[in-house]
Amino acid sequence: MSKSSVLPTSMCNLIDHVRNELHKIERPKLADMFGECFANTFQTTIGQLEDGSTFVITGDIPAMWLRDSSAQVRTYLLLAKEDPQIAEMIEGVVKRQVQYIGLDPYANAFNKEPHGAGHQQDFTQMSPWIWERKYEIDSLCYPIQLSYLLWKVTGRTSQFTDNFRSAVLSILHLWRVEQAHETHSPYRFQRSNCPPTDTLTREGLGSEVGYTGMTWSGFRPSDDACTYGYLVPSNMFAVVVLGYLAEIANEVWNDHTVSAEAFQLAAEIRSGIESYGTTNHPTLGVMYAYETDGLGGYHLMDDANVPSLLSIPYLGYTELSDPTYQRTRSFILSEENPYFYTGKVAEGIGSPHTPERYIWPIALAVQGLTASSREEKLRLLDLMADTDAGTGFMHEGFHVDDPSKYTRPWFSWANAMFSELVLDVCGLSIMKIVRQ
Image 1 (cartoon, rainbow, N blue to C red):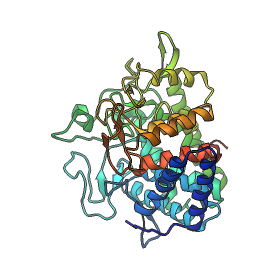
Image 2 (image 1 turned 30 degrees about the vertical axis):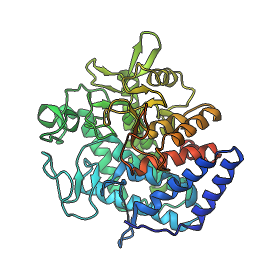
Image 3 (image 1 turned 45 degrees about the vertical axis):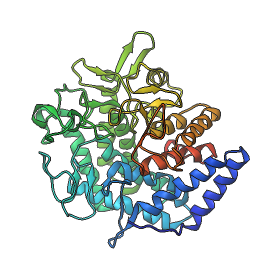
Image 4 (image 1 turned 135 degrees about the vertical axis):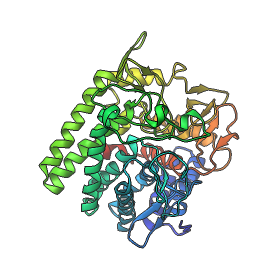
């Protein structure tokens, strides 16, 4: 990967602007951390390839996740309108993602070249290009979102190539197939000698599900196996990006057939969410479940990774003020959520993916990005700055009693989410682009 010390002028100017804004409110450490975290992804994880595509590693793992790579460059959309170099880099990410989806839409992470690195011993249809083949709905949502936002910010449509269209058609087909997972799905995944969260039950088919209209997911955005196959926040994300896809089909391709299919599928998934993805909490009332099986089973929790229930307005599925979201938010930011931890120095949402009582800066950032007041956003930013263990960067998770205990010293997605919250506090909201 490139280890460039030279930042684009547009990036330097934005860092200087944010630094000035944060010094006005006496947040010098936040100013310094933003400069480092915002630049880090560009300097350390992005590689321009000879074919014009962009390969993006996650940080301490030398593979490209469809999800992470989108989230890592998302904050750079603010620069793309005025800086063609940044716009080309982001378009290159989309180009690479589309190539990978063309290889296998069920895979979540890929190698730079077909050298066979990663989890080649898994019992599924692996290839030397694939680092890991855990099927996650959000892996297909993120590239559509990134390409759409690039269009909205810059007006460019060159990312919507024939290959992009082919990838989109394969996504539509896959989501249709996975609406009837029990009878139609070709996907199986098993891993030996691993924790239960790294493999699927029933010889790789996953736990039994009934038809709901939602589309099935084997794994969460944490790369952990779903308990129940209908992952509600990921289905919400699918509804949102299907709306984006319909708009692309209508306005860019003049293809009303693809547009109608996207609208119809979105309507079916949304109906499934509202019919099967809610539950009546004894004190809070109707709220969203994290997962369901369509057979009466509900998993009430939230995970730190996006898409999450906490991130519903961030994704663009509902408004922040939506009553069902607010009831859900009250649940997941309380100790009724089994992955909400309170300790001596912090409280927040963690994940079964990391040790107990570790909370994630990504979840703190989402909590801030969906907070209703600037004061709450700043409180969470101060907490993130105070728990960096003196590194100046975000980690995957840290212990609520001792932030010097953390996982993953280098995690670009977390740095990007921290940067997005800082930008939001400074009046530079990417969410406004999402919701326009």
